[in-house]
Image (cartoon, rainbow, N blue to C red; front, side):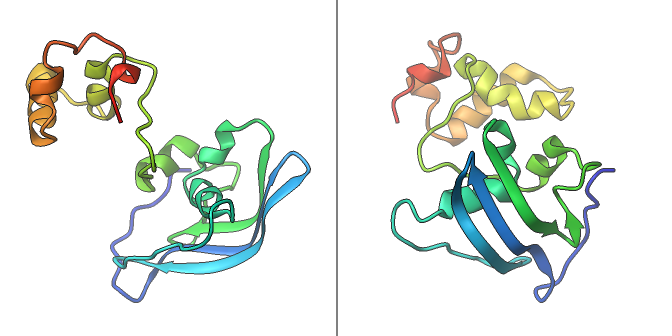
Length: 158
């Protein structure tokens, strides 16, 4: 099953967590969180360092699945579908629920491939070189990296 994309109004929920717990091994990082995130609204998670904000966010797009010792209990619904159901594809979840990291987090690929990645996995058929250049120009990075496109994404400064 894939996640259905639904048009929503301001009073509908995009995400709902119900009795969510997150564990890393035996350590419980998040205890019994229930919250609602409305569609088309700005929601802020505020709290001290280490209180679980990023862990909750990573649970919303199943990034915690990539950590072998991590597990999530409870329900997380995206437009009323439990994103942790066995028949839901985690890659599709990540396509629908993005995450902006606090620090740059490139893929272990070249600068070019990091920029091209999203277009490539979504079947872009146009001129990839033009797309990469245009994207880097829009981000005001083209002049800095145009001669380094084949270098690792890790070579970029923060």
